[in-house]
Length: 321
Image (cartoon, rainbow, N blue to C red; front, top):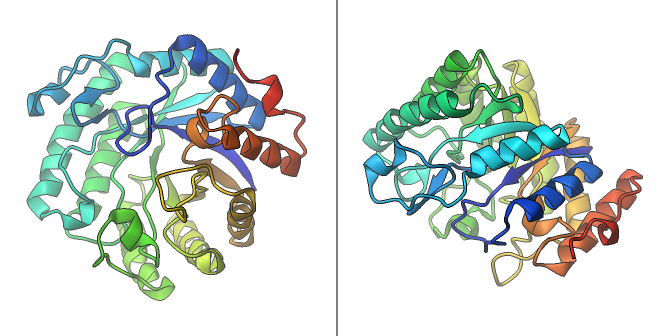
């Protein structure tokens, strides 16, 4: 089991910013490569008042600050330099969690993101590193509008880009979902109910979505392998590749969010491997695993992972001055 991809969460709403420029990001891409990462995924192209690139489409929905640097262009440039694939993220436009939305809100998300996809393709689709799409909406169940959202956006993104792959990262509606979503009444799905919901979803989005990577932090450690196994079997049956989103931050602490304890991270790696999953994406390298993170423990997590994988890389050799 290996981590081969990471999300890029510079357009964030719940973790702090590093305030990095090009040189700092360049060093971080080098550190990612040393750990075996070969794909980077922009988790969203806008959040709140801020955008990852100077969009003309997104400000139609309210005041947005014009970014001082085009992060999509920067990430593509560094991906090309370091030999990475870059997946472009869409926009979570409406407030709240997807599970709380009406069908009209889902349709509104579809309308704005069709334009966002067209704009991203027009601006960056010719770039060598532009390898795929991330449909940013995080869901856990078959709510009205969920299937239509992924069907429509995934099919459109593939059509305009020459069939480049699409990725989604849902979450398990497990025992930790209430705390993660700040909703004491959050939906809970057993592995059996999870299978009912996602058997239907996967069946209907097959062809529009190529890869799924469930967030692994919403269930407890002893039950993770069971949820992952059920998901991988359903994905295989519908010809969807199944990764695991192996979270490198710790949800069990009384504050959001420190780098995760290595033993917990190892347990999640082992659970994915036991479920027959060989490839993972992490949320998120730069804050929680990078030698250059604001958190010193992130560099130690990097070292423990590299030791486990038999890699020579060490955080002390990859830190900036």
